[in-house]
Image 1 (spheres, rainbow over the protein chains, first blue to last red):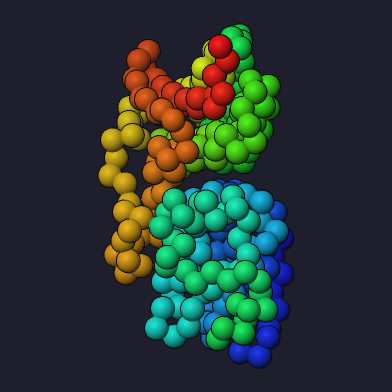
Image 2 (tube, chains in turn purple, yellow; image 1 turned 90 degrees about the vertical axis):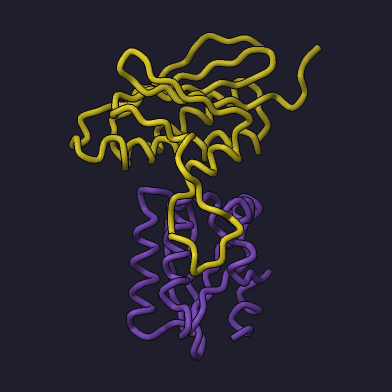
Length: 109
Length: 144
């Protein structure tokens, strides 16, 4: 898994690629927490290049969403059909705002 | 297609779970499941093995192992995970509610729910001092 973080005005774009599973999900959680702890609470998580995400990955993004609740948001962009299926199984497709591309997601703030 | 039983043993460590996934993907493809069904088997085995390592083996320092058996018959691809953690039936544990609002959710706990959703059948037995979790995926096109 690779994580690339960039700032777009007040929005933080977190682009993840590869496989998110129980071995590495904590790295995503730590990256999101570091941003939130430094005051960057308007986050877009771009999942276009995530080919696989287990429940360990979901745990981290739900934790991040709970952490920013009230001060910001975590919005998702272009999940693959497989990641979308995982989000739907956990009912998270109705809890996260999901956008078709990162430009729209960043612009939504 | 009937097949012999294939077997892999992994150490009870999170870093070994990916090996179990690779093995199941290879065996599921060999059995003739389609790509989507293969992915379902991979994710279900990932969740099940992670659960065993994180909860079943938590206090035992990674000295245990998980045996993964795969075989198929004309209708189904069958995966059995066998471990010697204390007796634990994951299929009877309370599951999180996918309709719950964010404030009523804990962050995790979705593994068992996923296993039940992804596989056509899941059964648990405890015998010979070991947990046996059997996961079944039916072939979509059953040969005549």
